[in-house]
Image 1 (cartoon, rainbow, N blue to C red):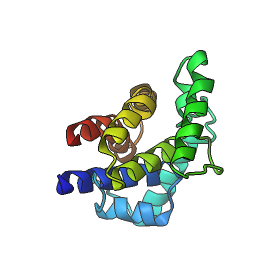
Image 2 (tube, rainbow, N blue to C red):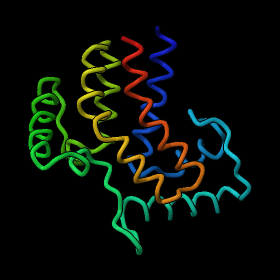
Image 3 (cartoon, rainbow, N blue to C red):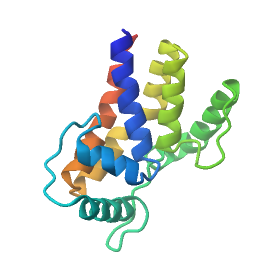
Image 4 (cartoon, rainbow, N blue to C red):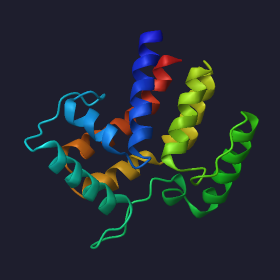
Length: 174
């Protein structure tokens, strides 16, 4: 079971890093094939790869000249009724575990993935599975679908496709 959770933790850390607006270390690992994605077909110098990826990430998530950016937050993909409730629930849940979120919305994917990793590290496997189902799995398929409709590069498409499998893998660990 330890190997399974180590592999899962590696994927979660990779995705959390990606959704925190990654820097050169992330790009270097991606370029070298040292991520859960393995080796990618990259036929350009490292600096060109970084520049292209930074531009693509910015256009997807921050400022797109042609379409509305994608926001990796649960409240963008759930009903109006659920929006406020999800943030309230997360606030209480984070508080119960002594976590304070100030730098991003509480339902931002990076925050959710980091909290999921925390639950797994604490060996709260059942709580992790419940958390994943309620706060990650409930909307990420729509988010990934929206991301893939934008025809991202291979590296971003493969990264996005890791996301829906996370909750399934957490459920299998239980």
